[in-house]
Every structure is written in C-alpha cells, then in structure tokens.
Image 1 (spheres, rainbow, N blue to C red):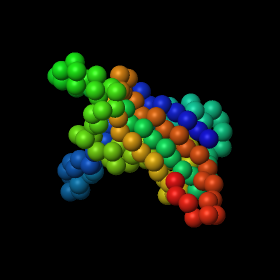
Image 2: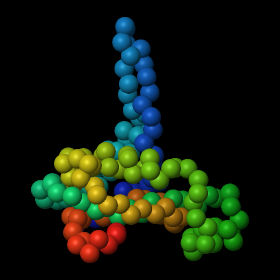
Image 3: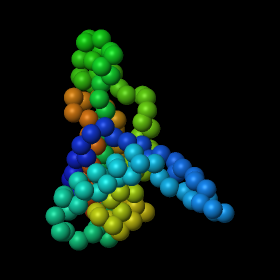
Length: 146
C-alpha cells in the first residue's frame, strides 16, 4: 500500500493550449497543470521510497480537501469544516483525478490503465491537499463491490 499527501489546493488538469510554431501547431499543457503534476510526482516518489512500480491491477482511494471560501460567514465556514456543507463547485473531481493519475504514471504504477477501482470524495478542510492511497487490487470472489 502506498499513501501520500499532495500539499495545496487540488488542481484540475486543464486542456492543452495551442501555439503556432511556423507551419505547425504545437500543443502544450498550461503551466499551472505542469507545476501541480510535478508536486504530485514528488510526493508520490517520496512515498515510494525506492519501492518497485506496482504492476498489477490497483485500487485508489482519494480525498480532495478544498479550502473553505473566506467570503463565507463564520457559521457557514464552521458547517463546511464539520461536513454539513459539501463542495459542489470547481475544481471538477474527475479532472483532479486525471492530473494526479497522469503525474504518478511511472512513479507509483506503470500506467493508469491499471486502476480498476476508485473511491473519491471532495470535502472542505482547514488544510487543502489531496490524500491518495494506492493498493494492489484484491479479487473479491463473492462479486462484491468496492
């Protein structure tokens, strides 16, 4: 099992930008996405501590902890921290997953196609981060679910 925490507000993977390079169009990722993926890869590399890449099917449990808006009243902020108010705003959870999965390709696992199970939640918290746990998939012969 590999566990790591990516500090800072989770960042959604943005669409690539296009630039004309002579007669060709070059696509490149936005700097914010590149910086976040580098931070994710660093946290994952530290958690791996020289362990070999996971090669079989894996399960991922991920918690995206978002900052509570400072513009909210103290009462609403307290409700958000207590879990009574959930973040139904950007960033999109699926795009954050994409950024994290792409960043750990070749660091934790060979490729993100190995992910056969994903549990994800998006919450408010005092310290924004992404908490990631990756474990080898254990077959559930009874046909159970994650």
